[in-house]
Image 1 (cartoon, rainbow, N blue to C red):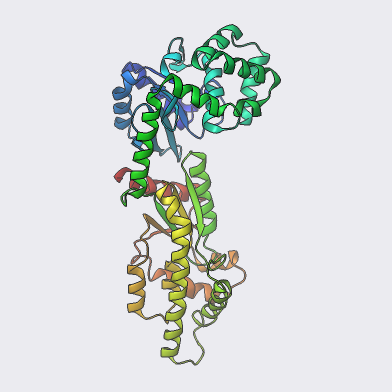
Image 2 (cartoon, rainbow, N blue to C red; image 1 turned 90 degrees about the vertical axis):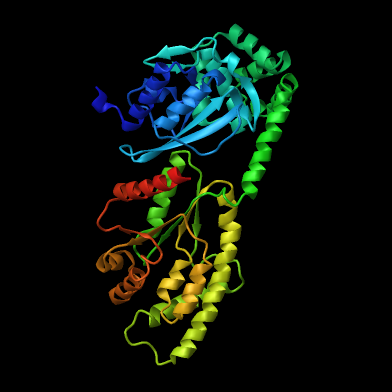
Length: 444
């Protein structure tokens, strides 16, 4: 029976069994169908609520099982833990809520309202139907600011099947909020008016602060630490660079990793570092023209009869313009997201100019490399020239052979991990990259 269970589900079942063994008071908040159905869709992440009394036990178990805390936030609040599940070839993200469900430090649903009638089924603890409906409603209104289609379907199913007690639901909602808001919520539910529910967000937050003034302190403390993290030079997200010759599969690989990270609830962003979509005026035309010249002269064995000093001066001028453009992109398009904790993936990078321009003097290349923002990880995406030519039909085979040769000379200097997209399928490539990301994450 165990053989048929997906690796991700096995990992979670093992984690919950450890929680039960150590008597951790916890409850699963969402994604019930994944555990209760044989063919449940894999969740992006897992949300659990842990009683503050069991906080240390739960965090110790997560640490022992190899999970890494990606953000340290004071309790009550939410901490995010991730782990690379090797056999599943994906990251698992677990949001651990402590003290209750919170939004920016404001606890809008205290833990005491959710632990009174917990249901245990197949070794996993779930909320009862009334508490599940309340938590789903408040989570969608306050945290999400909208109702996902799957949440709407769940709510509709609970209402149609009368799976919850309306009297108990209303009384508990009145205690958590107030009579007026509770009645408005039940009225909007009957009409399936989800926009009216979302419009209650401000009133719900104000009611929560009125009932628990400590929320103001929590809000200020958490945001103070967020500002400190933004200002700190040591708090910065990963920068992962993908570069290589035309037709090697850089864009495909970048999109694959971005999609996989997003599906694991890990914030990531893709940034293009080629010559298109420039900030500086006329740089698009300049880079496009220069690109043609490079491919005409650099990749032919009989370059035009122009003196090398002239070619060197031209390359220096173009390279400094190119680096100015790349620095503007980095500062405006990359750095803000890295400071916000995103993993930024780049399709091409500063390195392309260093590798391809053979007329650029070595000392200038060393100077430019010294001032190039260093990536957390660098991947040299390549393959054999015939396959490059098959993918990149606009360039002749000889040009691609010489282009690949230019990149091959520098990937060790750039400390890049070489990946041959012709010898490995996408799943294997994803596994290699994810393993390197995980090794880097565990160090931080």
